[in-house]
Image (cartoon, rainbow over all chains, first blue to last red):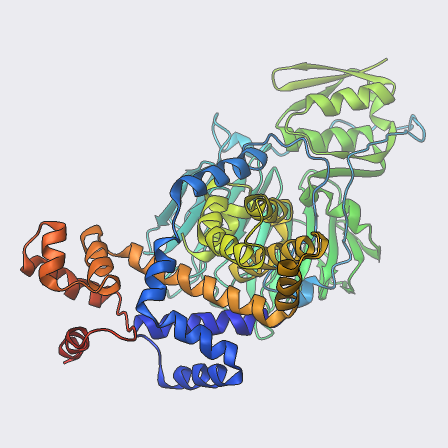
Length: 404
Length: 188
């Protein structure tokens, strides 16, 4: 179906009617008219005052439109999502790259948890303190933007505005996203940096000045230049983010985390680099990346589908489980033989709760399964409680885990 | 809202973005459906279904063009299916022949797009202007007649026409000579 060329013809006809058509476009239009009689006939209609008058007179029917909209809205935006499946194919400008996506999931709601074993290790792992980024964000737990001059701004949801910083830079804020593209900024001599802090319980999206898109998971922060100026495009990440990097082979894109440096050209990948965890994990969806550990000089290259685990001393790469790595983007949690400790840490970040274990041993219970990301934590705790030998007590923002 | 912001809003499930998309496209979709199955009472349902399908897949779309194409294809296919499954009487059979040919569907779409575009262009004019455009250009009344109809002075009508020409130049066939002169004067 030559949809695009036909919509293009419509555009030309409109331009003609509005008197803004160019000479070359007139030729295109003329050629189209001569292709077949039916085209010429349509042309005659659309340039006829009486015909247009009749059609335009009937074009608008506000009450009918409102009624139709209300029916649609009722079934969509007004509908509380108890939908069980979320399409997870992320098309974007880089559709060619995205086409290589390994993920083609349609995730169902069923959830099964079975713990493979509950092993009591000789040395129980201590409760890890979660880097509490939300401590910096005040009581209201809002997403924060820190500008180059140090001033900090709360970004509330459902807010739409243009933020103008001290350099005259325009940043577009829309709901849960921020865009630096088309920022009409003045020429700057040095790169100015902004930092976006996403506390527990929140997610955010960012579009950098070069068109790179970043989706940030809870308890994450990213520092980035408002305009890329150097030979390299560098950002610093703490936490977890999914990147779709704009292609620019002349300027490699580099993500620095506490433990690793990830160098990419134009590609989609997920990085999990929480400072309180032992290792960073990078999963590559498409394109290619080179990963190096910050402490050692060892560097490895990933191909799509691979995953690299970086600790302070070592890098390992292998076949990745993209399903699990990207579960957060699909509003799911997926576990493969994860400990209850890991699980609770994930829930802690996602739902902004503190977790306390009544007995250390139960942290080592292992779980495999997948669960939908519900709006609140209660259903998830219910489900875990039903299947595993643990129970939970939830008081305000604190979850206590007991053995049954 | 520019296209990027609109798409983000829409993908995030925001009503505002979705409503703007609805506003931009639903009339063309209704027009297309009416073109293929004018006797049907299910046109609203068909268009509604297309928007619901779009909503379900909203995360897959990065451009308005893709959204527009998707909606058109949905509506077209559903309408053609209706045509095939309805009782084959003479009028339907000839319609089926007419519209199984992609070309005619395309022509309806082109027409719909143009009508929407011109409609929006007129709507952007100030209200007084719109009325003058309607009566002066489409109804082809003289300035005096328009002045009487709208209860304003002839000067006002002339001023409004000038304004309209700045915003929207309608070049339509068979306009009385006066209008042609008007255009010529304006372009000097």
